[in-house]
Length: 413
Image 1 (cartoon, rainbow, N blue to C red):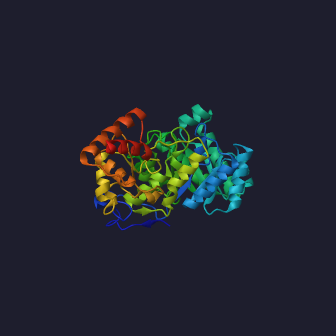
Image 2 (image 1 turned 120 degrees about the vertical axis):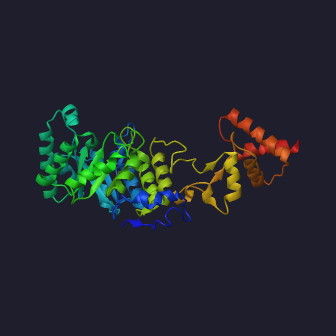
Image 3 (image 1 turned 60 degrees about the vertical axis):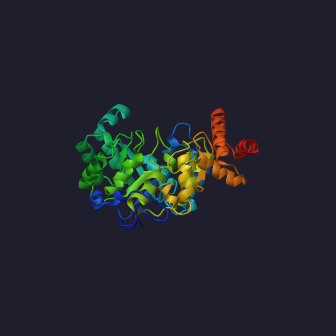
């Protein structure tokens, strides 16, 4: 169950310090967060659609186990029609009874539904193209065929005891009336337990999201709404948060944003932003976020940039001399002057001062203290200059041993 932090204190706790402006009543007046927000992880299906990313059966099971440890509410374990190995992985994940709800992913085809049933799942995501141009140009179908297939497959899944999430590919680029008519017909003539609104190509802007959710809820008012937003313009997480604030119930996300093309909305960004900037606690074990991202990278060739928010390897490092001075003054009395949240909140090590081209005297003083060395002010400036030169020639940060060599040489004269 989602917990809501008192807005009077939600912006500043002992673990994070964000803007009080986030909680001004005028800012929040139209927010209608669901009381039971769920994260639906798509890493094992859409995540693996990222070009060159491959998980074998054992890796999929291991990722599912770690997602369960984080507290992810739902896991889309794969698409049985892709391969025998995928079907076996889904079957095994179901058998593990890990805690999250397990979904299979299928096309709106009875044979795909049968494959899902054979894997032992109780839940299925059924996809169909929902924009007339994609239906015509990419599938060679008529819109009526897409609707008929949806009605047949969703009814069949329901009749066989499956919970049905109806997944509308490219819905964000469809004509609004055509889209609403499609989902309404499937809801009435077929079956859906929930609707997933899909921005397949990341083409929505954040301001359009509340409008879209409003129009959908006018037609599908009695069912949970999920959102599946891609990151082609870098807005996947922002759009997902906007949808949650507009009353969506389910956020489709992936580990560190893996997925087709530019990927999906990263669950880390969505969940931590909800917690620290909206006062919405979805119950995840936030301290496991960075370790899970590291595990993903260890078992694949996936990389993230070193300064990627939340999961980047170097976000807890300080090289700038100015900020190193802040660190010296504030680390023991006000550590949240240095970052909007304490890095151990998401499983990172504590803030670390490093040595490089941007370092200043405060960095030097911190490292001299680490090594038990003493230098006068003139020597400290000389060490700073030598550190900058060494960092430039090396093209990166210095190790503590490289710093020791420079410092001892300067101090000894």
